[in-house]
Length: 372
Image (cartoon, rainbow, N blue to C red; front, side, top):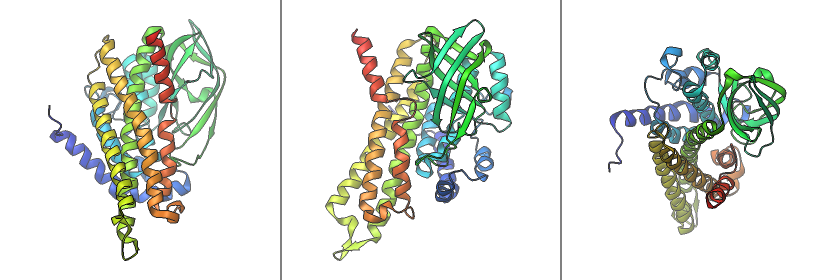
């Protein structure tokens, strides 16, 4: 088994790392204070292949052949080192574009791909707790309820929705114009263009319903695998960044005649965080590798990839929470001042364990279903 990156993978990681170090980290503090990504992000990131990397070439995108979730996980770790909010925007189009390209009708593909090619964004929502009211018919769906808060929903043109209608799984592409949108700026991922969407008996045409029933259950599992793998990778990057800032501070801060970074208690905090981040990175890369090997109609390969992504996300949420809190502790009182990056990173850590449902709760339900 070879764990080395090939030349293309190494180049992708290096390119994104340079982009993060040169631009994203320089923009992060101002973007957090403003609650919005800088206007230059779209142009600079677009030149590097973001936003349209999952859109087929024939539809104005950059995808020529199979999409690589392993390469996406590699870049996700680097993006997490920069800014979780901007990283969410850079990754938000992937799930909708891949899902519509694979399961969507010609009408769904035309609607979404035209919007993305024109510079639009799309996001992904999951009705994990069944709070939406959905009814299905031959003409499509009717949806009532509220989606979000979700990153990118404050500016997105479409939402890829995973839900249940009449106790049957469905995957649908929802036009944001069908509801009432409200932009939000939460405490974490403040540059992520968060928003909510209120729907009142909103009509989703049949052509915009990607899958129903067993096909929708299988599609949802695969979409969540993609999403969870990316989340885990980005969380690993946030944990790495937090400890890097803490290490710099601990080297410069002197107490009792020596840098505090030499104290055994702080060395242990840093070492535990670095170990956790390394483990999450490997698990995310493994989940991406398995996602690339899912075969149509093969439930075993899909289940293996989803399980790996789920476990990676569980560990990622724990590791990034602990690493960012420990980084704040290393800085002491300064850790709570927004002049230092670790305060922002601690706020950013929370969303990794919350988006699209509670991972541990889902796993409990899955285990109960298997035992039954």
